[in-house]
Image 1 (tube, helix red, strand yellow):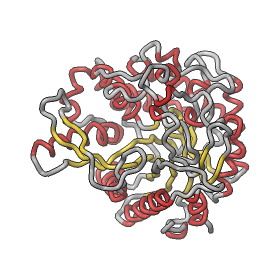
Image 2 (cartoon, rainbow, N blue to C red):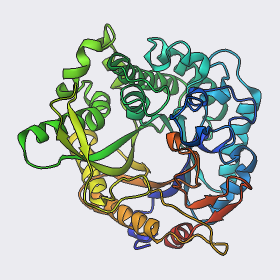
Image 3 (cartoon, rainbow, N blue to C red):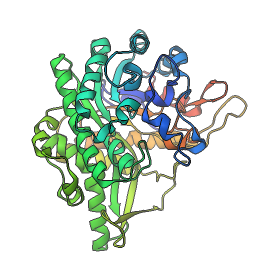
Length: 441
C-alpha cells in the first residue's frame, strides 16, 4: 500500500470495522429475532433468501477474529452491539448470555491492545418493536434509550468511543422510501417520520450516555460525493435535492438544529406533529463524527417521476463488485466540506471505507490488488483532507471479514479476510498483509 503509519500523526488510529448482525450469528446466545430475519423470508428481498442466523459465526470465533486485528498491528476495532441480542423483546428483561458475550468481547479487545469503538445501533430492530412500527413509532427513541442504558452500564466503562447510530440515511430513507433494506417500505410518510425519529433516538441516546458519565460519544453518518450528470439547470437541481436528502439532512440537524429546505419540500407535509420541538435534543454537542464513504452519485432530473424527481446515472470510472464508482477524491472533498461547513475542528474518523470484489481462494491465498489500490488511494485522500484543515483522527477499513451483506446476502465480499461460509475458515487476503505492512512501526 502506498502509505505508511508515519505519514499520519501519532494519535491517528488505524483499524477495521464490522457489525453484529453481519458477523455474529444471530442463532447463538439467546438473541431475539429482528426485522432482517423476516425481511429475508420475503421473495426477492435478499439474494438467496439468506439471513444472518449464522453469518460468520463470530459469536464462536471471536477470539481468533480479534487475533487477526492484533496481528495486523491495528489500533482499534469498530464493532456493534445488537439490540436484539441484549434485549430479545426490544424492552424488558435483558439476555444474560448477550451481555456476557459483549463483556468477553470488550475484555478481549483490551487484552490485545485494541481500542473498542462501539456502535449502539447497526440496523437490527428487534421484531417485537418492528411489530409496533419500529422507526415510525413516536416512542422509538424511548425504547432505544432504554437499550442504550442497559448495554452502556455493562461495557461502557471499557469502551474507548461510542457511536449512537450507524448510517441513519440507510435506517430511514433506504429502508422506508426505497425499500431496499428492512423493513422494506416505500412510503414517504413513514420515511419522513423515520428520518426524524432516528435523529431523536440519537439525541435520547446522547442524553443517557451523558447522564451515565460517558465521554467520547458521536454518531456515524454516510456520505457520497453527489453531483449532476452535466451542467443542465434541471440536473443541478436534482443533484441538490439528493445532496439535501443524503448528505445534509442528518449533519445539518445535528450541527445546526435544522433540516435542509430542499428536502423539506417533500417531507414537510409528512413530518410528525411537533417535530420542531425535538431539534434541541437532536442538536446537542457530539465529541466526534464518524464518516462512512464508498462512492459518488451522479444525478439527472426525472420530471415524469414523483418527488424527488431524480434518477442516478452510471459514472464512467471503474466500479467495485457493488457497481459503485471508485472515486477517492470524493472522500477528500467530503471531509474538507464537513470541516469547513459543519464541524470545524471536531475530530473526524473515517469509520467505514472499503470495496467488494469477487475474491477467491487459490492455492491457499487470495490476491486482491484492486482492494490494495482502493485502500491506498482513499487513505492518501484522508491525508490530503488533513492538510486542508480537517481534524482527522482515524481510518477503519470495512470490513475485517467477508460477511452478510444485507440484501446482497453472502455474494459480495468486502473483507480483508476471506470467509468460507461452509467451513468458516478465515484466509487473510493480500490486502490484509499489505495493510499490516503499512501499519508497522
